[in-house]
Length: 236
Image 1 (cartoon, helix red, strand yellow):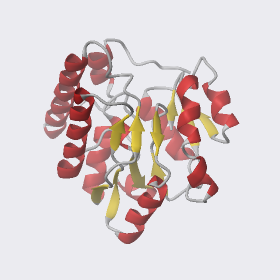
Image 2 (cartoon, rainbow, N blue to C red; image 1 turned 90 degrees about the horizontal axis):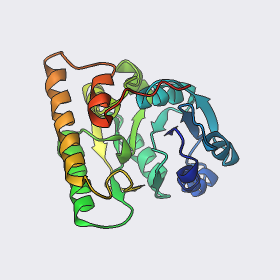
Image 3 (cartoon, rainbow, N blue to C red; image 1 turned 60 degrees about the vertical axis):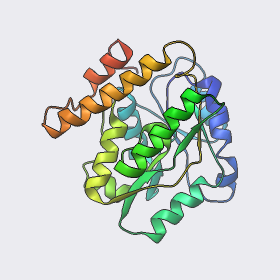
Image 4 (spheres, rainbow, N blue to C red; image 1 turned 45 degrees about the horizontal axis):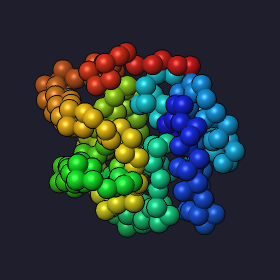
């Protein structure tokens, strides 16, 4: 679980894991903290999570978290999301039933309604189901051995989720389980919704084209700068 200054939201996210943890369907929870300046680390430890500290962008945080895991299967859950209690059982079932599956995504829905958010979640589902490319807030999961075969988790400031999807597709099959991640709408609400949507689609398309031509920025810095309008934070 990558996190940076998420103390306000992290408790609800970790709380959603309580039932599957108690049932033994989750072996461990690792929070990869990117140098938080609030109480993120304290909240994580209060909920029984193991904390690792990593510098760089989100891809670097997740890579550090994956390296600290001991389980054969890993699910990445963003700190501003919540997970339905049956998700771990469904993930393990999909991996157990079909050995050729390298990983995939759970699928997401936004907390709250609205036509715009419904369109975004629908586009996310369409892309993951028919093209096998998921975003990080869709609950990406994978076998550790499949990830290792693809060169490990992509240490990128942005587009790490897209690169992970493409890597998994190259090492095996991917699946979409049909939903179970509840995502905060905070990054999409308010003014600028359509501009943000267009920006995401433009960067996604540009990355796919550049990757096919062998011109993609392997650090993700260029895409981060275009999306956020600033350099990636390198804390700690």
